[in-house]
Length: 329
Ligand SMILES: Nc1ncnc2c1ncn2[C@@H]1O[C@H](COP(=O)(O)OP(=O)(O)O)[C@@H](O)[C@H]1O
Ligand SMILES: [Mg+2]
View 1 (cartoon, rainbow, N blue to C red):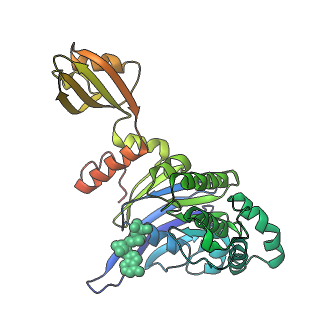
View 2 (tube, rainbow, N blue to C red):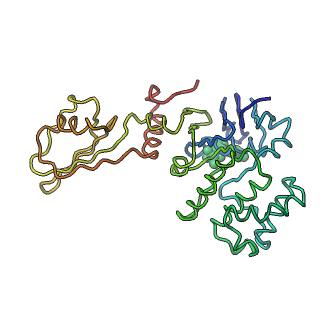
């Protein structure tokens, strides 16, 4: 039996369609260690939901294997379901006329939690996702965020060691999204392994230990979150504003600095640069590149995960930069 919480090997999935076969996943390899939170990124149609559904035994693979704590999703689907919970983004399927508590009880029974256990767990489960106050209201009266949190409570009611979250913050306002993030962060303390798909890079930045990027059904990058930033090749964006003569740029003087943009208006100029490693030396490099102009202000913004993803996605789109992105065959 394998130690990994999730172990995916050579996984493929093809859908038959009228215009021909759609390959949603091709030869995907992925491991999630116990207690690890892995962020799954990729543009629309990359195969994220297909992978999540296969792991949740909602869809069969066409080739390869997927295991949850050693249990094969095809051969031991029942065990896999016992070991895992799933929350699909924008999910419906709640009973609007029933209360939150009644929904949780019903889905808990479906997940195979015994009646007595369930009664013991309901209050704690509702409390964990902050639904205690509204637990006895019909779900029809819930906000989107409350519904999504109820889904999370349902996904966790069998206290699974593995949780699959597909776009859990989709459609939520910032406050609701933050609340949900908080709930997921709390899972880390319990040692739950999580595969988290999200469009919001803030989710990944705040929660994930590792980032896996899918493109057209294949894994194109698999790196620790700290390593992820290095894929972009820079660590800070610097904006320099000045007056008078605009700078004559001599970027040959520093391998540290890349110029993005120089604009001028009404005697003021603004220069945007990217810096490979922002450090105490950087002002010196900056001075050398700018060469004696009158500077009014310098603004240094650390790299955001969003910038990295944009950068990596652009590289993937042009098919270049395979040296920067760790590409799996
Ligand atoms: N039931 C289905 N029938 C046909 N094609 C599908 C089906 N589900 C997904 N696909 C296709 O598989 C690809 C991957 O979809 P999906 O896994 O939903 O991507 P993502 O979640 O990353 O946006 C897409 O091209 C999508 O159109
Ligand atoms: Mg999806």
